[in-house]
Image (cartoon, rainbow, N blue to C red; front, side):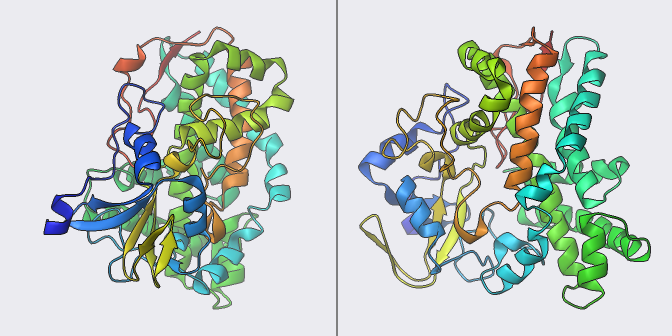
Length: 400
């Protein structure tokens, strides 16, 4: 570790006594030093930006690069480089070209057309859950399979192959794996998608991977490797985050009966703002978004020099009292969509319309189907994902 890093605090991950709140350091740092240096694994340092306005300013600044290939980029793991086709690791114009190839699929009007299919998936899974011995694991029987079923339908991936991306996702989001292990896991999923894209080229159907194979790869707009890399990002992100949001949201609502009653009293009306508030409140992406200053930046009265790394913890921005009244209070009627749970700027989550619809359907349906739903294990004994970059619960035993 360098001398500079020795005297600096690391990025906090410990949520302390309340598993639903961000690390306590963020509240103190927003007040005492909202832009401060921290240490990163491997003896590196970076600037941590903790206030909402400053986070959004950096995420919308073209001088803050997402290109993990640049020297000094504050990668999550030492030595980790973005894989080919990973949208989050490119700057414009490359980023914009690749993102436009996916935009139509994730347009709100196109995702809205999937509501009937998602309703059917939810009903199927809830009936299967009802048939399980009690207690049953909500993760295994509902929260994990639902987003996998949805993205398999949308992308044209056989649901029987879901274990390939589910298993490798565990490696990719773990804080305890090395850059080499993550690269191998990405490679496993990429190899699978390469073969799938080849099949789609021979026998295309109505799905995203067929569109990439026929309209992009055949025409030379996109290489097979780039398309596979885009697929890795979409498959991993598309199921890992939504799975954890379903599970944590369920647990949070069971702990707040008044909020749950408000949701169930008018689910069609309350579900959309409720989902936005749960996204803000839980903020499950832990390591912060990463950027590199390509020029000197002034952020919160602090000068970040060109070549220095920046870490932007979304969970801190989403609890900033200067932006959200009583930010540590869950309020399903808050009615705000200005949170940054999906990021901000040109790199904000492409799949957010899909995640919103899944959550809006899944949460009310779960509680309507099981009005007596309860968790059978004390919260302090649940296996929270403290060692993962996407926060959640590994198992959630429930009865009804």
